[in-house]
Length: 130
Ligand SMILES: [Zn+2]
Image (cartoon, rainbow, N blue to C red; front, side, top):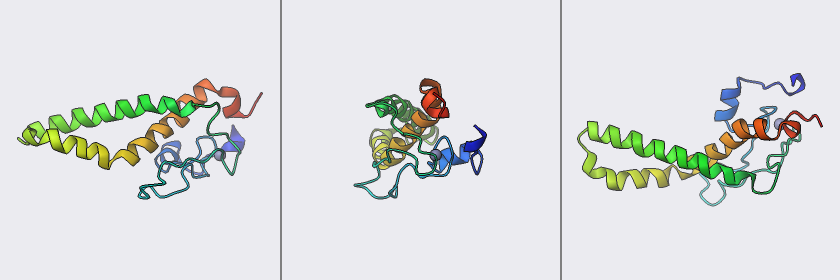
């Protein structure tokens, strides 16, 4: 794995949406603010040639991550708004927050698939050793 050393700590590569193996290539070619193209994901790393989708439907698993993230947002916002005495507005503001942060939720769900699930499930492809 030394040939695929990240140029920065792995967590920072994760936050910057870089390749999980080498940390250099951007996984999402477009800006997160581009409403129509934020979801576009590259097929493979331009630097280390890691295939981002090791099998068809790999990113379906990201649905479970986004479910967990959305539940965390609902719980956190409900508790915070209750503490601030604004719980009556939660029914509107929580769905609005989820829709506004959809690109972030989408991308980090995929990032969690690539950084957590990929190295465990597709070890041979991830390390490049057959
Ligand atoms: Zn790479």
